[in-house]
Length: 438
Image (cartoon, rainbow, N blue to C red; front, top):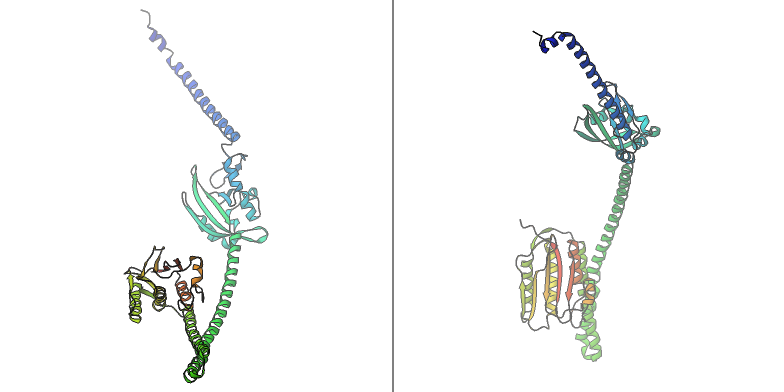
């Protein structure tokens, strides 16, 4: 019986298997060569296209860096144009790459810096501290100030920022150094200017103290030396009328009366000037003050002083501020007395004290009346000394009261202003620090 095809094929089985194994080994080797060629081709293409910018060759600790020409890469343009010095260093502290700005700060080129120890960037005395700042792990960062070794033996103050990152299992560190020379120079200029300013302030303070002493001497002179002749002038005028009035004609008695009136007006003016001087110089004791209570007390005093007048007062409750109690009472008293005076000829006179629209961190108070009012064109003059918008024969006064009000409010850090119209009343406003509700 003829042998089966399987049997025939099975006779040379051993030699056929040996030949197939050899062919398989050759195929695997060929595939590996092809893979290496493909990898080499891809590497060459990456280098040609700018896909890589450097090669690191050698075992850890003995790396050699070969930079590749890739100036067209956008990030290289950015690093090269940075105002800060930048460098990449290996885990062993070797500079792998540095931008031109770092070269300019150290008096070297980026090519010269590559391959050198990063600790050589600073003087030897600063290297331990510099090394501690550089010692960051992957994903960590640190900041500090260093003194770089600059050109010609100089040092360059710099702000250092260092970050650690991983590149294919190798720890690299990125350094960014900002030149602080201009900042240090500016700080030195500021210190010089501050010293000059302090000297000027001390000089001005001494001058102010001298002026205040002269003002105090003048105030004493006004208070004592001028009052005596004024009293004499007024007294002799009164004696002249009393003792020799029958010998004087009407004109002579009129002259004597004018002398007495002028003397009395001068005395009032001196008193007001002294008040203005006092509010400008006196120390302040700031404390919570209930302005509503102060206004009510002053309104009661005005009614008691002239019980024949019918004036309706409206005083808002609960207005509290931080102020010097004595000085702020002078403000409220001046404003309410003004309102009392300028409503003297008004039927159904009304005076209000209350709050207006507040400003941030401040309380705005106002005194409103329906009296004589004033021409709004001259509102700015109301708070200047000796400025009067009404004839003295019509409404008495020296023009000092509102100047004192403005000065007191100014010393408290507030402001004053007024609104009004002729024959339609006036409203005076002032702002003060609001009292703490607690």
